[in-house]
Picture (cartoon, rainbow, N blue to C red):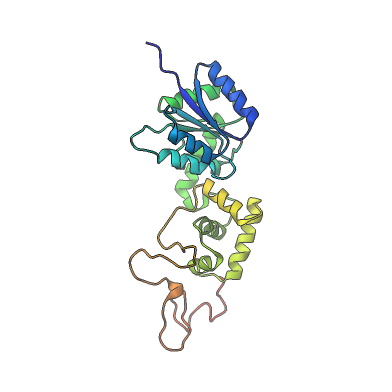
Length: 273
């Protein structure tokens, strides 16, 4: 009995690339069941389609919803239907993008300059339930995960300092400058300086772009205590205040670090250290 035809859904905003990949897949006996140029359009089509895709071929860098968010949504779809395997085929080649996609649930990652036969083989492997990476990533990811094991807090964005990475992570969680300063026990001016350094090192021009880079790399996971849109704060149910919000009896100024008034870094002029 002949093998079932592999059904592929394409997500990319480059028409020439879409046309070339469609022709290659169909020439190899596969069925392209749909296309989309944004993540939002892709999810709408995949959810309403009566024909279930076996593989979603996805460019990671999209306008609007990021590719990583699309991967998460595809894998969080209707439990009554099998999820298609997501194979990223992207211009992005940095380790943070690859690891972010894999952590979100992608089953493969190929670069767009990969040979056609490698791409076709990757589609077949993912359709069969396997996982695949471009050869260019193999040795690099071995080193990457060694670093994650030994120094997990330094694995993402090695160009950033530990403090800058903490600030970026909180930005990606939705914290504003005031809440970052409370969380890290820093002055707001110091937080602004760190954010400026992050923008410069990541070569981004604004907060939204920095957050997109962070989330693509897997930073910014949700946690209890993230401030809401109105500046409030939810709690984990303990009823305790954070150090920066601790009450202090009498007219003495509180010390957010818990050192007491006489040894408080703020009082000793060491607030930013």
